[in-house]
Image 1 (cartoon, rainbow, N blue to C red):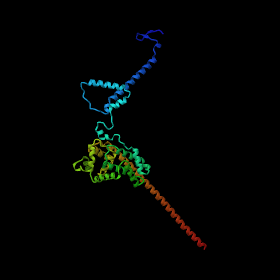
Image 2 (tube, rainbow, N blue to C red; image 1 turned 180 degrees about the vertical axis):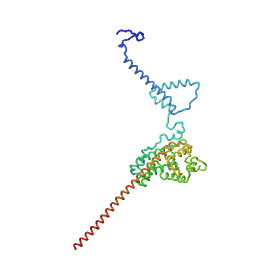
Image 3 (cartoon, rainbow, N blue to C red; image 1 turned 30 degrees about the horizontal axis):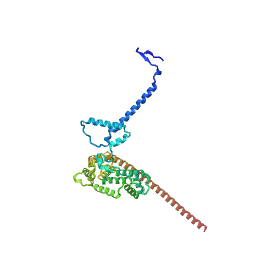
Image 4 (cartoon, rainbow, N blue to C red; image 1 turned 30 degrees about the vertical axis):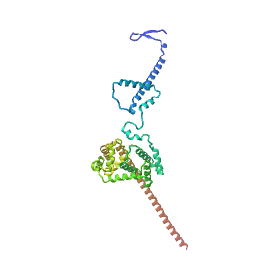
Length: 367
């Protein structure tokens, strides 16, 4: 083909090149591949720069130094070090060496307090439940199996936490929870006590100690008023020596104090003892005031646990009512069956008497 010329709509002459001389498809494919390769390289370099730039954020090993006249030379040396790291065959090793991270050795208050526990052996939930099953020695009722499993797992995870601090209010909440959930266990008091014994033993606690601590706080609070409880939580001078005042000190003074569900339920039990109406709408503002204003901690989790407690309680009360109705119906059916048997036996006795009279009459006629 020979080159030709033509004019466009505006009269401008255009040079038309034969299409056979332009490898359109090959050129487009090559350009696309080159662009993708360049973009991939840019992303890789950006990721490496981000990782290398944040190594000091993982574990700072020195305080930031003020800039000096030698900042340009420092930046140059950093750039050369960064360039050498890009050429290193093992960039991950370079980052780890730069970070120099050691578990529990960070320069923080939390690490200084709990760093000695780094790498410590912690029992798993499976191990705790295996010990619970071994201690119990019986099969849990199928209706209660999921609930018991949740109790064992929740209690174990609370007690193995390094921040956990057991006190009499927590023990009162635990005892209150167990009494509520196992109140209608079908196998009787002996089986309920065996479950409690196995639960506390599997979590490293003694049943007698827990019940004694809970009973002591309950005995102290049963003749108190709501104002007395709030004064003890605040730590007023007249109530500074009360057991509840001592319990209220760690939440206010320890930034790493850990709230757990049984602590909140213990507060619910104290509210019940001092005459607060046991309704979730009545309890919520009291729990909010005690946790936020008296103890200086967030009330959200405690109020959520309070709502959960009342939901479970309502369901258990409903189940108890249904079980009583079923029991009443069964007793009524049994009474009806016994009455029917008694009437049948009475009719049989009357027939026997009548038959005996007929026999005697027939014998007299024959004689």
